[in-house]
Length: 332
Length: 212
Ligand SMILES: Cc1cc2nc3c(=O)[nH]c(=O)nc-3n(C[C@H](O)[C@H](O)[C@H](O)COP(=O)(O)OP(=O)(O)OC[C@H]3O[C@@H](n4cnc5c(N)ncnc54)[C@H](O)[C@@H]3O)c2cc1C
Ligand code: FES
Ligand code: FES
Image (cartoon, rainbow over all chains, first blue to last red; front, side, top):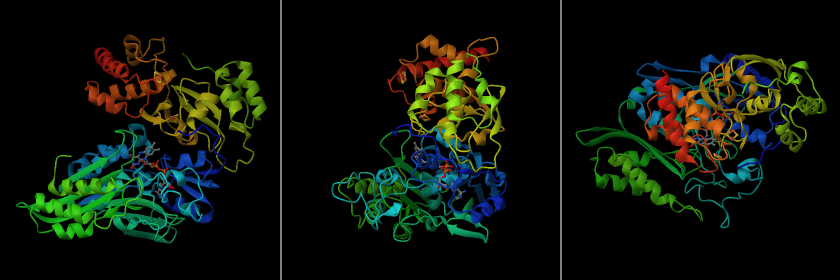
């Protein structure tokens, strides 16, 4: 638990009411910070580790809120709260995977305020980094978590590149497994990213968790109808039943016909600096019967090449078993 | 349990820290919280550069009352409630969204007041533990249930838990014990008094049903 520190250092608080206004403000100013629910941001401010000059606060932008049908799918505003996502009848009835993942984030109060966008874009929880240690991700030249004497039980088993921190978002894996797209705006226009390309690892940029650059705003997430009402599997393993990020989570959408897997999307989070889409596993199981043998093969392939750190080798069998269960379709 | 006015809060737009403390001590309203102020040099009003163009005098709707208060851009709701409005029923445990002691309702939904910027609740209804009783002083059925069950030990966590219980009974007047536990899963009790707290929640639901 953190000590009660000072007040947050002063910043200019800007409260736009439209997306255009928000991206203009982000463009005009240096050292700005986008604030949605603020639950990831406030710790940084209170600990005085991140010190923006201006904060662009999004709660006044109605266009960022809400869930609506779009084509055969759904469009969810980045500013929609996790509670709204979890309780939405549309999300529950067709894309229950996302509702379930959102409902297991943190606590009721955090879900009431935390937004889908903020949940996706949240920074990593590596405590060396969060504690203000000058590691690679913070612009320094060392990883404090990767050494043989580090506390790295929660860190990654694959995909590391200097930094060994993991992505903590529960909704990220669900959206990858649903084949969602992220709509990003800045003053030059809109870009669209496939969910699995939205999250990046340290090999691409060690200081960012997503493709977003300064000036970018995530406006919507679009979920296509492709996997509506598929056989979904969500399981999040954590130390505490409340208030806790996943050690490892799995999200899967599987479409079967007559016991044969027709197509599948599977994502695992908590094992790498970004949520990992298991494309090889998806290819392997396509056309196979949804049985134990297929599940075992999927689990083994999923964890091939994992390189645990000193204190996290438990994540290898954990991830293997979660993928197995997802493919077999156990009751979570 | 009615709100204590701190005349200082509405009197000025740019108080120095010294006048703030004097104001607090003179009214005696927030003396119990002044140790927080001394522990935090440069707190609240000491910020010299306020670059925001926002109006600092805000009108907030708290517990059905309209309160004018001078608020910094970076100020959290817990700070405003406790140290500017004298509503010290809202506790600060962790100041990090990790304990639930600061739970309040904003437009009927529970939030951690330590993690809300006051400037974002301008046009919204804030309810704190002080605002639960009715005008004639009758306690809220949830408060009555807590008393009936002797729900807490030290009770530091009680205001936060009670706000979550109110949200629970509003949404689900007939919860199972498991549902009640879910609804209270964003509040921690350092004394570990969860069993009695859950008894209180179940009793609260019963009292609320009876009154409905
Ligand atoms: C105690 C605690 C426990 C938690 N447990 C879990 C958990 O179990 N599972 C889990 O998944 N998460 C967990 N979280 C993380 C939490 O879910 C997120 O912090 C929350 O959802 C963030 O949403 P927000 O709107 O409050 O984000 P903010 O803090 O407002 O934003 C987070 C980040 O995203 C950026 N951002 C937000 N919206 C946009 C946008 N539209 N465009 C561009 N950038 C944007 C911000 O600049 C910031 O960098 C926990 C957090 C806490 C404090
Ligand atoms: S003080 Fe706000 S959650 Fe602990
Ligand atoms: S009764 Fe003491 S913290 Fe809950």
